[in-house]
Image (cartoon, rainbow, N blue to C red; front, top):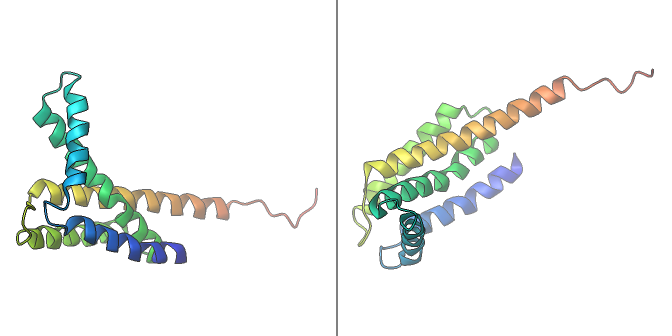
Length: 145
């Protein structure tokens, strides 16, 4: 849990740099999404559809670490608690982006980011539960056969 707390801070710093960078400075990320969409479009999928799906997936992936780290860093954090924090965080991001040149606020970003947080939280919760069960059913090694 201590490692998760330590990782949460740099993750939030990187996230902040990523989402609050003005549009012109965020060009490399946008270019990577365009390149990926062009590759998919070469397979016959319309570019606009490919770009929309890839961007949505990238937004989900961007917030998976938030849910994962929240559940691991805060003892007893339920998945719904991480989901609420993720939803509030992304709402704040989208409101702030209204004032950043070249950035656009969208409802799909709020949905994708929240889904990413829920996915990360669910993965962490399942891992903790599995670890807890494994510890509960460990054979007693003090007995000899």
